[in-house]
Amino acid sequence: MTRLVPDLEALLEPVTDGCSVAVPPDYSGVALAATRALLKRGVRHLHLIAVPQAGLQADVLIGAGAVGTLEAAGINLGELGLAPRFTAAVEAGAITMRDATCPAIHAGLQAAEKGIPFLPLRGILGSDLLKVRPDWRVIDNPYGSNDPIVLIPAIRPQVALFHARMADREGNVWVGVRRELMLMAHAAAQACVTVEEIVEGNLLDDPALAAGTIPALYISRIAHVPGGMRPLGFGEEASDEAALAGYAKAARTEDGFQQWLKGWLA
Amino acid sequence: MSAAAFTDEEQMAVVMARLLRGLRHVAVGALSPLPASAALLAQALDGQLQVTILGSKRYLKFTDGGRELFDCAAQGRIDAFFLSGVQIDGEANINLVGVGDYPKPDKRFPGSFGSAYLYHLVPKVILFRQEHTPRILVPKVDFVSAAGRSPSNVYRPGGPRHLVTGRAAFAFGERGFSLVSTHGGASAADIEASTGFAFERAAEVPSTPPPGAEELAALRGPVKAAVAEIYPAFASRAFGG
Image (cartoon, rainbow over all chains, first blue to last red):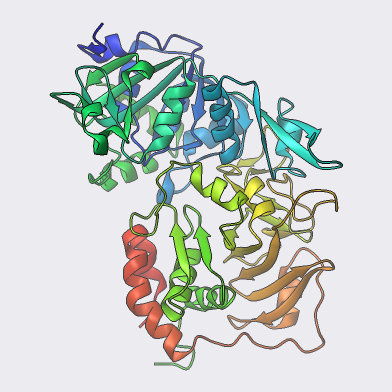
């Protein structure tokens, strides 16, 4: 009954090798403590889906050799520039890259949350993305004529993994205006969430909170992990800029990254 | 203080801000400090302009998650947007993916982000890139993240209208790019030498009007302060005075 699990190990049971995992962008609650736990466990061949972009988390997972396929509209370290392990892996052909554009990832997840096979989307025509994404189709708008439009197939992640501000003991998770997290939870088969705080009572009882709450219906597992997004910031909490800059510098080389990773996993 | 008492970034911000006159709503993507400065400058000089800046708390009024910007654009609620590229070609195709052959390029870049979509849907897209070299402004991009032109049957209310670099301002139309003015000490001949694609130009190309006193005061006052919320490093480096 209860979705609260005692530790990260239990939280991450659904994230098996080869699993498709949807993750949020750096500003939206990245489950980095959970990512570290996955790497300690030695997870492999993840199909990582960035919604719609990612940064530190994707770079670390790729550098550690845990990613087989990456679907993203963009990967970088924000103001710190390129994500060095991502770029090195793509240049070496070490991962399968499924390049996308932001609204296509949103649309694919929206199709999944509606239980339909695809959503049409404007734009994109003429982009080489259509050449490298044969799963994106072009049809003639059946409600118009001679009006080509792109279809984006549903994206159904096995797991949505993110960090949120709070949950209650019923398993409801509050995300506020970070509604891409709600989209991810709706679209994924399971949502595994770390939270800053477990609150008493039911988040759905307060209409102001309920509007930003993912009902327990969509949540599989919750672990109480304060600071689970660090060194990234979240809500009112600022990022640890020194730690992020330290990563960006270390990860410029394979050796530097491996040193950093050893320290992070210690 | 010398005669050219403004920075290259200030000149670019002023050029881009002037292109936003009379619009209702401009949006600025992530990692775009120069466009953010331009949008906030335009707003400072014309209080009517609504400014949306991804990555900002103060200038992001969306409540429907990451998709809202894109839905908003598709409905025609955004008048202008800024895009850049690791390569930009003479057809205004932009490349944000990589240099060399896909999928294993010689040099990989972050990815296309929202460009493939917004380039079609936002009426006035302003391309920007401070570096003005044949390495960036190429005859043909290695990967088309977003296409500059579309066949006439493609639904496309938006597209490229301008390109602003650290040395020149271009307009883009049916006949391709045309050189509007030069700045940063560049002549039209310098621009021809440092641009990898052909463009139209008049026999005499004017200099870009430099930042005016009112523009500089706004840039170095309220605009700098607001930009610092999102891009502190840029704000302390890019503004003079």
